[in-house]
Image (spheres, helix red, strand yellow):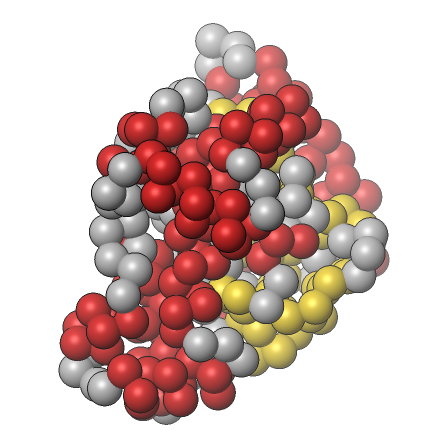
Length: 287
């Protein structure tokens, strides 16, 4: 798959799979209701902005993205591909319960983790085990998955310097830009007008446009429309909702307007896209 995986609601189970993220280039990434997103680079490389700091992600590198991590995919190599695991809040809370507080401070400041050379084989073996747990759907799958993830994060925690203290601050412009993108993720199913977001941020649409072009290199309207298109693609790919139901969920006045909107932005019909993606998704959902 090439698009951005999403959890539809906070009650969903976790979601795993592989993606090239090719449809997310040039825009902030949003994973729906995922409370935490774990990604492991399987091949290639990408340039990504993490909390407004540019970083290169290479094969074997790990991204641990909280729901408030500002992630902007800038460029990717042709062969770039990641494994992803999207966690809802209930699973993330279970996993986090015994973990040390220093780990959360570290991951907030360092969402990109680069394994040591000697740990790469361990990471590969861990991923094989994780895939087996997900695919087996055994009686104790939930416990095994939780334990597997806890072991992963404890391995990271072991390598954090004991004297480490987080220290990251953002300018007012960065905070407004971050808040704008959070609002888009939360409200784009109901609101597609730039004025709504500007009003919510207590700024003018013109100033929002300036900030959006400075930090995201695009207009607010383009970012909103891209996120709406991603929401449509996710519903087409991962659900069996009828077109009319998707139109209702995304606040389109009728299915025909949804069809025109989607085709204008993608060049594809809704039916053709759904058939193509559901035939090749390879995504595993855990209830």
